[in-house]
Image 1 (tube, rainbow, N blue to C red):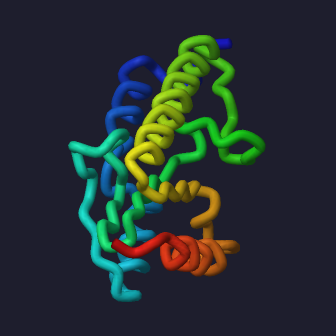
Image 2: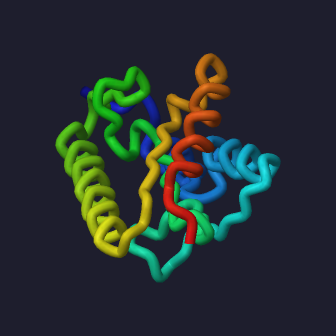
Length: 142
């Protein structure tokens, strides 16, 4: 099946997608900061460069986009109809990289929390963010 956009338009659209400071990530950061949590961003010397690192709680948080990280069973994860093999390979590499980073972080005794883009949609954002804080508090403090 052909793409609905010209290669130039598709390239421009894809170039506008951020890997840092995404809307879901900003929602999590603002919520945690407003609730007294302090964190570092995208720590390069930790496996997977977690989006947020709460050293005091020995906790890292990854804020995943449902499409890019292959959120199974999610309505926001739809495999593209064009270049399907390319996209599935790309998404599967992301999933494997995420799993490897989580394993390495757990071996280093970090508490790992994944929060999905769909969990931050308006209809369930409040509960998801409260659950996030509960998960952080359950982690052993340093």
